[in-house]
Every structure is written in C-alpha cells, then in structure tokens.
Image (cartoon, rainbow, N blue to C red; front, side, top):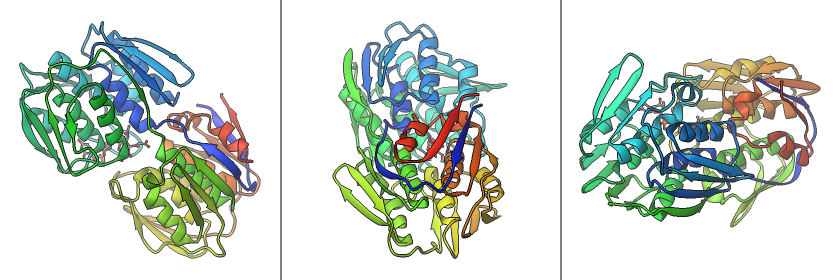
Amino acid sequence: MGKYIIEGKNKLSGEVFTSGAKNAVLPILASTVLNGGICVLKNVPMLLDTFVAIDILKDLGCKVDYSENTVVINSKDINKTQVKEDLVKKMRSSIIFLGALLSRFKEASISYPGGCNLGKRPIDFHLDAFKNMGINIEEDNNLIKAKTDNIKEAVINLPFKSVGATQNVILASIFVKGRVVIKNCAKEPEIIDMANFLNKLGANIKGAGTDVITITGVDKLKDFIEYEIMPDRIEAGTFLCMAAITDGNVKVKNIPPIYLKALTDVLQKIGYIIEEDKNSIAIKQGNNKNPIDFLETKPYPYFPTDLQPQIMSLLATIKGTSIIKENIFEARDKHIKELNKLGCNILTDKDMFIINGVKSLKGDTVFSKDLRGGACLICAGLFAEGKTIVEGACYINRGYENLDKKLSILGANIKYIKD
Ligand code: EPZ
C-alpha cells in the first residue's frame, strides 16, 4: 500500500509545476482505440491509473511504448473487444473503453465496474444512452455485452451532467451515420481536451464545454497524430490548499486560472491573496481568515467534488464554523473520521459536513480510503504538530505524480515509503 510520513508546520514556498491531467489522459487513452493507427501523447502523467489504462490497451492488442511523459500507442492490431476484468476492477473509469470499442468494432464487453469508496457509482446513464443509439446491451451475471449492426443517430438527454457518460457517448458516436446530440452534458475542461484530441484525429465534435455537444459521424480518422495533454487542475488546486494551510506563499505554474475560478473565489473569500497571470496562480497569506458559511459541490464550472476533501482540511483549521454540502458522490466522506483523528472537529449530517475550525492538529497515523481523501490527509499533516503517517499511498499515487518530490521542493518535510 505504501505511506507518506509528514513532519508538520513547515511553510510551503516557491514554485511548482502541474503534471498532465489524470482525468483528461484516461479518456484520451481510451480514444486511441479508434483510429487503428499511431497516437503520440505528450505531457502524460505517469500515475497508477495511467498504467492501468496502458495495460488495458496492451491487453486489447495495442502496442504501447513510453518514456518519461510521452506515450506512443499503435492500435492497429487490436484483437479482442472484452476489457480485462481485473483491470476494470482497478479503475472503474475503464467503462469508457466501451464506447471506443463499440465505435470501431460494433461490439464490446466489460465486467461491471462496481462501486468504490465514493459510493455506488452506477453506469445507467451510459447504458441507457447506448440503448437509445441502437446498441443492444445484455447484462448477464457481472458481464455487460454490447453489440450493434450500426450505431444510430440520436438525441441523448443526460439526467445528470455525468463526465463519464458524456465521454462514453462521444466515443460511441465518432463514426455514426448522421449526428448524435448530447443535451445536459458535462462541461469539464477535460471533456474539451478529449474533444480537441478527437477533432485533431479527424472527428467532428462541436460544443464541448457547453451544455449541448453535437457529434457528426466521419468515415475515417487520421493514422497518426501527436497531442499534448492539458494540465491537471485538481492537482493544481490541491497545491493551493496545501500552501494555504501552511500559511505559505506558492506559485502554481502551467495552469490557466479559469480552470480553478471556483476554488480561488473561495480562497479569496476566506482571506487569501490570489495573483494570476495567463498560465499560473499564486497564493499568499492575507490579514485574516474567515470561515465559509456554505459551500456545495456541483458540476463544472462550480466547486469541484475532487477538491472537497482538500478545502475541508483547510477550513478545519480556520476559526468559526464552515459548512460543505457534497452533491456529486453519495459517500465522499471517508476522510472525515481520519481528519477528526488528527484533532479536527467535523460533524456529518448525511451529505452536509459541519466544520468547526480548531487552532491546532496533532500528528497521528491515518488511512486514506480514496485518492482525494488521501490528499486531504497529507494537507492536514502539513499543518499538524509532529509526525503524521498517511497509510494507503497507493490511492494517492493514482492521481498525483511525484507528490513527495514536488512538496519537498516547496519546503515540506515529507517522505514516501513504498512498502
Ligand atoms: C469523473 O468521474 C472523474 N473521474 C471523477 O474524478 C470526478 O469526481 C467526477 O467525474 C465528477 O467530476 C475521471 O474523470 C476518471 P460522473 P465519473 O459520471 O465520470 C452518478 C478523481 O478523484 N452517475 O460525473 O465517474 C455518479 O454516481 C475522480 O479524480 C450515475 O448515477 O463521474 C455520481 O454520483 C473521482 N449514473 C455522479 O453521477 C451514471 O451512469 C457524477 O458521476 C453515471 C454517473
């Protein structure tokens, strides 16, 4: 599992670069199934989840090479359309390989990805949309089998702005005869990055980043493209919260400020000073700090659920009572018990979290149960007196590249112990 050991109370200062975005590279890796040719991806974050997606591609028959942060995929010789079960179990977002395989081969199968520590995480929006597109879906035991003679044009009204369902429908629509329109689609920057990749590959996708996306089917995609993955806004936001909690003075580079407006608005409301230029965000201490009466997570461009645990650990150290409402995942609260072990005073009432700020925290051994929950425990450990051991580093390493090295450069006293 691995662990991080932090000696708290060091102020973070200096500059840090974001890596490529995990939540952009995963759908783009799935997209490389489509062209049966070569895709060269740059600025790829070499994370545990990236390697799971690479293993899925290899298992399907792709040739994949990588060095540093460049990955080269040749999807010419794909020889199967079932996604390997043990890899699906490792990464539930592998469900979006379904759309890509269906597009190219008109059939695909995948074991039910199941839930994780954030709650059930069903895939009904994905499957309902596919049925609407003339795709036959059979679910026997734990295997989903999808098959069609041809994918039909359709208007898909998503019940919720689901990121994965939006991505899966886009992937299934690339070669459709006619058009697929997705209404109430997700608008995250990672959706735009995926659409940019696919359009560069020769697809015809309009409206990414708005509430309606229209895909007009094409006959063929290019055999070769190079593409640079966008920067990771959630990693960048995590660094801003870590700088804030240590009363630090940090500039996060290679991140367009617009991606994190919902977070920087909250940090300024608390009392931090935020300075931005075209491609960086700097944070430093203001004169005082205020609690946040009410903050809720919602789909982009509102406050992202993936930064809820991190802002919570910051608010837990700010005098007064703050309230967070988690609207996206039914169980994104596993970090609260662990934060309280460090001395936080956080109460939960279903999806409402009441955070009573405390003056100090005391290091202890805590357990990360999911990726962002683990990051929030490191955040709290940076503030706590003494030593904090965060077990379950494997969750954290799913989404943060070289986290200990980056934080050490900023002045944190942190060590990563493999096992
Ligand atoms: C993506 O997950 C991200 N993962 C998540 O980041 C992120 O938290 C989430 O979007 C929301 O922004 C990747 O991009 C790999 P959803 P996804 O479909 O696509 C419900 C991280 O920490 N739902 O937008 O799985 C679902 O249960 C991860 O980097 C259905 O009910 O999220 C959830 O409550 C965590 N039926 C809500 O919608 C469906 O068919 C949003 O899920 C699909 C989703």
